[in-house]
Length: 252
Image (cartoon, rainbow, N blue to C red; front, top):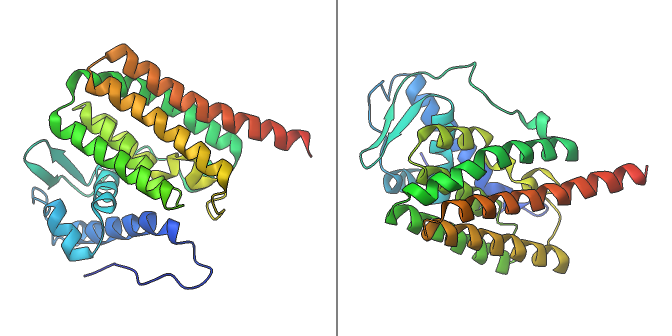
C-alpha cells in the first residue's frame, strides 16, 4: 500500500499534506492491529521499511508512531523497536480539533505545553543520547530548509518538540506529545493557507533561533538553561497569540 500523493491540484494547500499523510498512516497501521494482521506483541516494521512501503518521509512515520503510542496501540522500547500492545483505550486523553478552533483555545494549549515541555527540556538535558541530539538537529535542519523555501515548517517544528520528549527517555512525555499532534503548533491551527510574507518569514527565523537555544542547552546538559529556553520559546508564542486575541476583541 502506498499513500504517497501526486502533485497537488491548483488551489490545494500542499503544506497540509504531511499531517494528512501521518493521519492516513495511523489509520492504515491501526486497521492492521484491529483486524489482527498485527497481533499483540508483534513488532512493527522499521522506520525505513514503513517509509518504503507507504512512500512517506521519516517525519510522517515518526508522527504516526507517536499517535499510535498515544492511542495505546503500540509502545516503543528504546533500542529494540515498536511493538503492538493492544487495541487502545477509547478513554485516553485527547484534544479534539474543535477544541483548538480559536485564539483563546490555542493560548490554553500553549499554557499546557509550557507546563509539560519546560520539564521535558530539563529531563532531556539530563538524559539525552548522541542519537537524540542527531534527531533534534535533523528536525532543525528540516525546519530551516522549509522556511528558506517559503513553507511553514509545521511538521519539522512538531518533530523537534517530539524529539525533545523522546530525549527524556520517559515514554509518557512522548505519548502526551503524540496525543497533542502537530495541531499543537499554533501555525497548524491559525490561517494555515496564508502564504508567508516577509514579516512571517522573519518570525519563523526567530522561532528557529529559539529552537537553537533550546538545543544548545540540551546538548550542553545544562538543565536549568534548557528549561528556561523552552519556557521562553513557548511563552513568546503564547504572548503573540494573546496579543492577537486582544486585538481581535478591540476591533469588534
